[in-house]
Length: 324
Image (cartoon, rainbow, N blue to C red; front, side):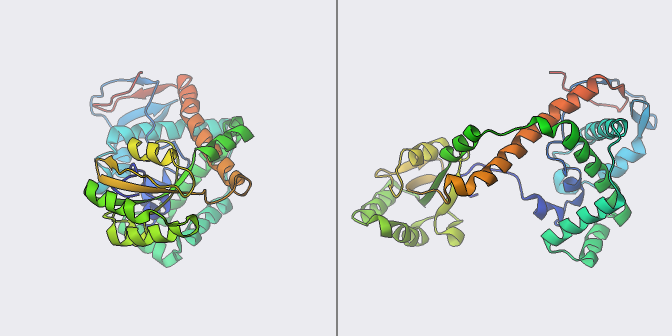
């Protein structure tokens, strides 16, 4: 991702987990659960008593909400309000209650294995984890409690929701065909872009990728060029600014733009490359990716369905619900 071409996207969850925001990642173990807006439930202005909401008779206290909010890193508090956190807590309780109804649970061993797996993937030792938890005033017991809740919710979704998500071969092929692999050189003026294009003339297809990389390293103002020599990897519809995407899509493999492509970031010379793998080689990975997307899309409607039958009363002062 650079300022020159690609739209913004979220940080890697593993980086956040073992960086400054353990709490945020833990409540996001199940993709799509965190920060869901409420679509149902009765909201009333409170008089300031200790109970800020009840969910089928189960109380959420102001003290609990304050404690949870204190664990949200300062850099996230501009986007995570107490109302947002309260709504996420309500959704969590409803899902946990539904799991109990359906007899869904996880064992202590499951929780331990999941934490150890996350530590292994992140390259973090038990001592390092304890240090980082201590820095955020989080105990190991609290960590295990959060994992228990989220793994229980995940088990519920695996049973009640995720089987409804399916991916067809046609969808896999459509996704594959929509991907583009490209390199670019970003310069400040049209003149500089035209000079780069002129220097590409006559270079054979079997040499153009290497020559383009050399030129990008010398001429491109894209900050990422020091890491990728102008190679942007593969991207799909909507990931690039429109002018860039349209120009790249019009090219054939090893073809380059013969006119500068202007965007708000400057002037681009674009080289299209073959995809990084065949359909057969990437089909499984694509199917898994599409399946994750479809599953996450089913979660909000499932929570909305459960909330319609739940007795939710919110007395938190200033609470607002989206009824659309």
